[in-house]
Image (tube, rainbow, N blue to C red; front, top):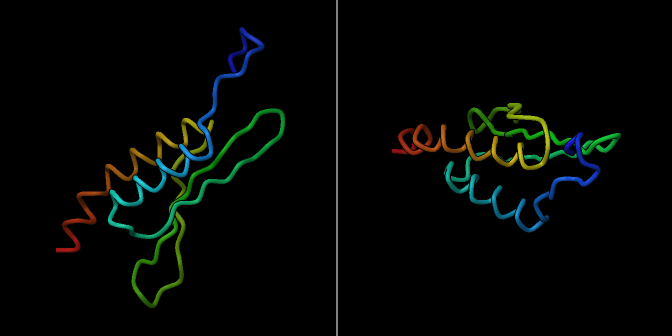
Length: 93
């Protein structure tokens, strides 16, 4: 929310959030899963994490990606996926 204006900034729709998260997941070759957690208090804040298994017999591990507004979390997920998409595609070869 802009502190100079009582009008809140537009948040992405649920369909946009799902679409962008699926695209980022596909860019990484479908490795693991993303989790987006909302925290509602004075402001709406979200936290994005990536859950994955380091090897087939391991327990799932979690990597924190970003926290902030929904738009910031989506941008962080997309950056995270872009940074790792080449690493996962090389490992798969």
